[in-house]
Length: 550
Image (cartoon, rainbow, N blue to C red):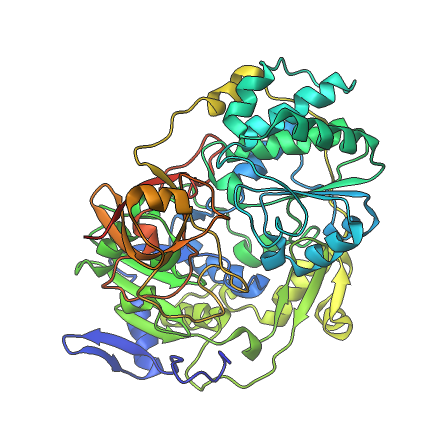
C-alpha cells in the first residue's frame, strides 16, 4: 500500500554535494520561502488525485507571487475547443445513459482498462462497436472497426457520407468514398452497416476516448463524432467530460485574485522553460519528468545549477530525483478533500483514513506555511479547508457538513449543446491531408491497466517493451524478445520487442507510466511537444525509426 510503503519519502531532503540529506521541516520551509525572493517563480502542477482543494488552493499563493498560469493542454483541450466551436458546450450525457441505450459506439477508448463501469454496461447493451487501430481488450470482445492510426477524421467523414445518403441533414460536401477508405482503412460496407444501425437505433450512445484526440487531427475527429451523433436527432448522446458542474472552482484557486496574463503551456513546458537560468520551480501534483514530452530538455532545465527546484512528493520519482529540495506530501487518504468524477455528475467527500507522517504536508498546508514565512497578511492565504469547501459549494446550497454527512452529492446538469455548426470541407481537408512526420513507425503510448499515467502502481523499470506487428518484425529481422532501438532525431531508446498481431503494421506500441531512473532515457524523450490545430497536445503523433540492435 502506498500510505505505508517502505520507499515513501517521510522527511524533507535537500540536495548537497554528497547527495540528498535530511533536514528539518522548518528549515525546508524556510528554504522554500527564501528561494522566491530574487528569482522568477514557476508553478508546475497538474491534477494529482483530482481533489479540488489539493488541486487548486495553492494557486492563490503562486498567483500572488506572479507565476505564469499553467495551461493544462495535454489531455482533452483539443476536444474541448472543438466541441465549443461546434456546439457551444463540452457536455453531452453522463455515462449512466449507456445502461438504457440500444447501441454503444466506443471510439478510441479501451474501457476494459479505463472505465470498468462502461465495460460492464457495454456487455449489457450487446450491440457495441469499437473504433480502434489496436485490438484492445475492449475491441476483442465487441464488433471491432479497425481504423488506421490517425484515420479517425476520414472514418467520421465516411459515416457522414452514409448518413447523408440515408437522409440526414449533413451539409458537408464529401469526396469519393474510395479516397476516404484509403485514409481510414475501413471498408465501405462496414461503415454502411454501422450507419444503418445508428439510424435504426432509438437510443445510441458514443463514448469518446482521449487517445486519438492527442494526434494532429484529434480535435477535428472529436468535433465530427459529436456532430454525427447530434445529426441523428436523438439528443447529445455522447460522453466527453463531466468533472464539476456547479462547483465554484475559481473560489478555491483564486480567492479575489485575477488570473495572470503570462501563461505556460503544459505540453510545451520543456520548450518554454528552455532558456530559464534564474528560476524557482515548485512542482506539485505532478511528475513532469515522467509524463511530459521533451523530457530530456526539461530535465536539463531542472538540473541547471542556476535554477532551484522544489518538489512536493510521496516517492522518489524522476522529478524528485532532479529536485534541490523535496518536501514530503500527505497521501490523499491522510486529509479531507472534495473529489469530482469523470463520466457522471457526482461529487464525493474524501475522508481522512490514516494519520500522516509528522513532517508530511498537504498542498494546502504547504501553501499556508510558505505564505507565513513570506509574511503575507491577506486572509485569503490562510482560509481553512472547511471554509474553502463552503465557499466552493455555496451556489449548490450545500456545505462542508452536508457533504461529509452524505458522502456523495449529485451535481446539476450542465448546459448541453446550444447549436450544431459543422466544419467546412476545407477545414476538414486541412487535417486529412497533412503528411506524416519523419520516421517509419507511429509511436502509440497508452496508459497501462489500473494506472493513471505515472500514478498508483509505483512500478520502477529501466526497460521498455515494444509491441510490434510480426510482419514488420520479419522485415526488420527482429525475433520475438530481441532488443530493438527506437530513434527520433538524436534520441535513442532501447526496448524488448514483443510480436503482437493486435498492433497494426507501421505502429510501435509502448505503455507509459513506469518510473525509471533520471539518468536513463525515458519514453517521453521521443514524444512530440507540438500543439495541434485546436491547441491540444499531439503526443500520439510521434514517428520513430526502429532498428534491430546489432
